[in-house]
Length: 449
Image: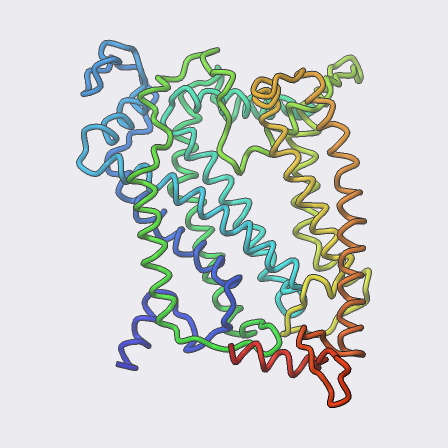
């Protein structure tokens, strides 16, 4: 039986025979297993999808669209959704796996950040997960373009606007990307090759390198962590596959037959991108219309700043944070034991501020929906986000820092005076006193229960 467990662990995840037992370590595994599902379902879909943008008359099974001029890409996506056995399930599982993969990578990065798991010797591992986050977003965007439906057309319009906003070379880059006229017949085949071949290969190679680094440096761990057998990794793999299959079965997502083929100007007001692109949409929505004239040419700062400069700065700081912290603290030691977030007040406060910045941009993507459903002025909602995006991270940083310092002081008090147990004892003389336990005794008592 033990040999079977070792072989199963080798096939599924190639994990060591034991690993640190903490629930926060599961997100990295969920991301890996979601990527496995993405590769398998994507391989299935490639047998039926045609990235051709040639216009054809639709004559498929979906009656409301019969006789409508659509692209071959849209027609093949409808075919795999409505005519291929199991095709719709595969499409929806593939889409849900994308959302879960990016979400798991995002939460895993938060775990690495707040516990200090990016410190030496794991700085390269941090860069790998940041790169996986960016590549996951790129895979989601390129894959979302492929159906050539109404939402795809809206995304292509955004990509066109962002590309054209780049000074000096924007127009030339747009021509290279779209092949002349927009949307053209070149961009979908190009994104198909990126989505199916280049991006997955890079992601798998990064995970292989990350796996090699893990074996070289070992797992980081919390003080006093226990261990669990590797077979639980296999259970998590099947649980991830089962949950993604359940979501693909009962959770409808991207029903392109309801959206219709891509047409200029057909994107509805309520159409929004997937959650991982919400921050970009929100940044563009709340950015003032700044378009100064420089050297006789308009500079579209209203798109350039929120769509390129802000995300570029955010991900650059995110990738370089291990070096930034090492430079600020002068700590170049090797760390294998993780921190509690309260133990690094400034780092935790910076992480909370970054989450606030990202979250406010994400929420700003729904400024029109917020104004509509709460009967508010769109102008007022937009200005609220403009002020909050500047003031919010500062307020959250200071508030989080003070909370961490207060928790540190509480820990010092407990080490000095002990922990209140709430247990009262009466002495023979009739006086009542509370039992005070040492932190070690409290930990032993908790483990026994």
